[in-house]
Each structure stands twice: as C-alpha cells, then as structure tokens.
Length: 132
Image (tube, rainbow, N blue to C red; front, side):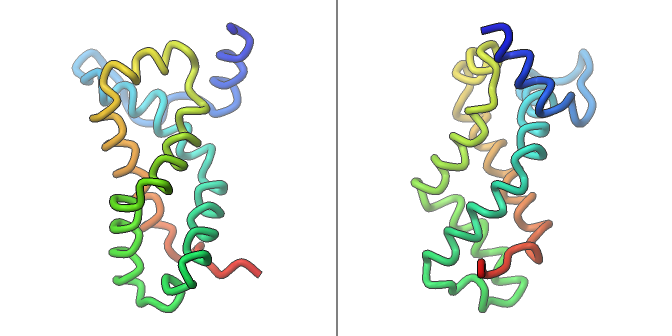
C-alpha cells in the first residue's frame, strides 16, 4: 500500500498554494491534495467535458463565450452522473490517508472540488472543441 501512496504523490506533484498553521483542514486538503490532482488530470477533464458536450447534441459549441460559462456551471452543478464521474477521477488519485481525511468532511470537500473544476473549465473554455 505504501508503494501506491508514494507513487501517487510522486506522480501528481506537490502542494499548490500555501499551507501554514493558520490554514483550515479543508484549505490544507485543497492545496495539498485537490489542486495537484486537478492540475494533473486537466487534459483528461477537458476530454471528458468535450465528450459530454458532444453527446448533448453539441449545443455547447454553438454558444457565446458567456453562455458557455453558464453552461459549464449549470452542467456540473446539475448533472449528477457527470459530477460523480469527475469526482471519481479525483478520488482515484487519493492516497489511503487522504481518503480517510476526505470522508470525514466529504460534503464540503466535494463543493470545493466542483467549484475548482468549474473555475478551471471556465478559464480554459477556448480548449473545448468538437472532437473530430
């Protein structure tokens, strides 16, 4: 098990953002665990969302940039299947200790995770193109 934990931490990289004694447990988890995973999985997230948009009749690709932002937010907040898939892509890269920490406060951490993903998608909205 220790080999898996070490490999995961090495693979996804270290803390992104500051963590200090004044940081809340959620903020520490966000910067030590969630941010590195979201960065590491970014290309996969882009592909997953692009595929989702194509399967939804491609409406997303015809929208103005402002409406694309709203679509992203709406979709991630309302489509439980997509949400759970994205969440699983993050949780799958937790170490066992991180998972134990996560389940103590999963509701708040899920909100943070999804909000960070929404912001990540919005900031990269130009990367979403119809798959050829």
